[in-house]
Length: 434
Image (cartoon, rainbow, N blue to C red):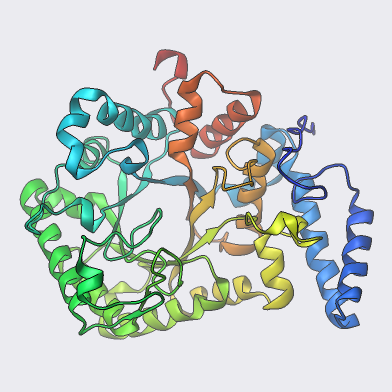
């Protein structure tokens, strides 16, 4: 089994860091043990932490294998996985206010080509689209879907399974994409809970109902088949975003019931980047299933996996520890607990966002095949129930497309594209024929 030549360590990352191949396994574990001792961590926790970190190092070493060897070693687990993606046309400068202009200046075509790149070149067949509230209503507050219509048209035509994210919180910063004035009108402050009877919640549900009415009218019964998953609110229990809103469970359950009334056979996704709150999704699922027994097996717990955080590399040792290891050391194995809960209660698990684009000074995701394989490997070895079919959603398709057409593609990017194609299988359109 061959190993790839690793991408040189980015100069923005202090040494040591998560992907620094210059430090040995022995030295890393020794340094970690000394650091934990210096922090006053007890011997039992030190031993536990060293075991967790040893697993991370083994995954890091396996991730450095060439693509074919990597697939061979993990063939059984990977056979249950397909790579999907999130896609936001706004990443290409599109907005409802400028969409007519964008049809002539090339921005719309560029964004559509990015989606085509994912579906036709990488053979991605599961796409999450976020319908931002403030980009889907006109100045009078009435539904206007013309920004998103070309992308939904494309997905419908090409038989793509669509996950539709709607609500107050939709993926990509600033997360809460609310029409101007509504937050001020509701006198909401940062980290507010959004309750079911609040004016903002009622207007959000009204907007979603208008959206669903439009989709049924525009696309007919086919849209019920193609929208295989609905995501009411992105990271509803995480206080992440410009305003840090959290969704009250009663509001979320009402939102889920609205989704099921229009799309009774669709999956329902609740995601989080914090494994300590997996149980909140589990409790929601239990409640929904009691009221709707047919939803057993259609509810999905999603994890947003970002191996490292821009703040971590500046902290000694922490910069070498990924989010999964940190959680397992200090919170216990919430991932195994979630898998056990899924088996007992009949819900599914996915990686909703698997980092494949740079974030701040973290430059390797999206630029290193080893980093990409590490993300996949950590997901299948820790988060997913590999006895069941599941999806790892690539976070950064827009970035990968821009690299692919920029003329700055490296061997690392080619390896990432090759791995996605091999995991997803099927026929693809070559970039040279694009």
